Length: 364
Image (cartoon, rainbow, N blue to C red; front, side, top):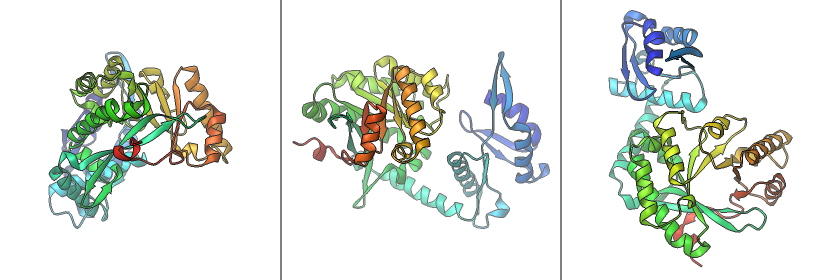
């Protein structure tokens, strides 16, 4: 569908430009001066392509365009095509994050790109043992008893402990997230079989965060299945967390991976469920077992009637669908009281403990 969209809608807008397919839904377009400026192409595409219907084999889907644009004459620091493309990539990332149709690279973009590249180079030189997992308790809100732990990746480098927000985007951009992620998955499942089971029993679980890029890896289901079998743990005790804002389309490799992990017996969890019901399509179309309500909503349940109403509706929907509800970001006694009153099954947050290395969390 995406290919037909580009062929029928975008290419006629700039027939002399070069279109290079880079991935499932991403094209790199080098706009020809013969066809005008990038601004003209962007303007024309937004008029022509917004919510454009594409029909394939009798199925109509509405597709839209999200663009990151780098115009050489607006970027005096750019000296070659590599820098120009990297600026366009950075602008596209910002467009996706901000949920804008288009973002233009500016004078601040190239320094950010170079910093991103530097982190990528440092990642490439890192050793597996530089990446370690911290664990944060997930508890029953009524008695605060830990029933599982979320595994959270940390990078130990130059006497610092870096969180994913400092390096994850670079790891994903360079595909280093796949080997780093495989190392983390193995560590988490071995910790589940060892320290977690010893300290908290055979019903305790570990949750593992997977990005869409990790789910696209051909062997992800096999890899996790082999680790579960090798460590003799029940698959249901391995939670697979996928963020709401990760794009998991039906029929895509990522969606098939989620379905494969569900068939394996893993527990599927949607992380950071935000305001509104954009994740309802996951509930309807994917095998979701757990919904984690985002801390931005949980922080408002005490004093904000609107947030409380949205959270209540999400909990009602989840219960009606037979799903487990988990409140994340619980930091105060008042928030915990609201979480209990709303009927959440599980809770997580600094009130119950910060993420810590296994040696600190599981030593009694």
